[in-house]
Length: 114
Image 1: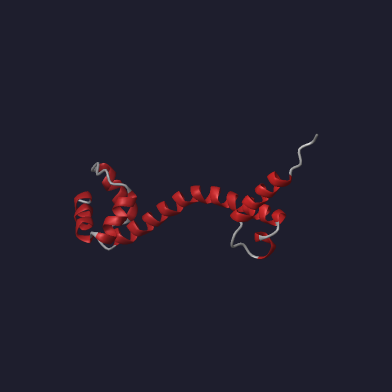
Image 2 (image 1 turned 30 degrees about the vertical axis):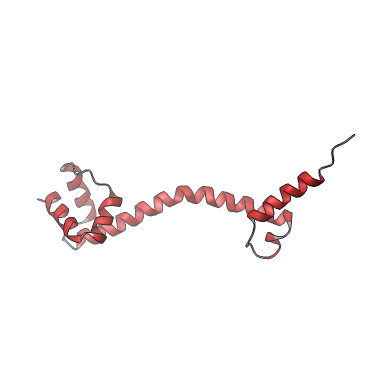
């Protein structure tokens, strides 16, 4: 006697359609189109989890460049000065300081560029 795939297939299709909730047109209701959409969404999610790290680093660098130029220093000279003085703050922390604690950031710039 063979096993019929009725309930198993129904469960699998239901799972995919649940993942495709909110998609437009047939992509949220039809299994075939929903499956394509969910697989493509998964690919984008995978790629963008890695891209996110690059994008944020670029944002921190842009913010830092703008902040140090207010103190008359270029970004590259500032980073060189920081590494030479062995100040162990990364770009994320420095950009947060530049936004939220401008006085502290000013002290860091002065210390690095003495």
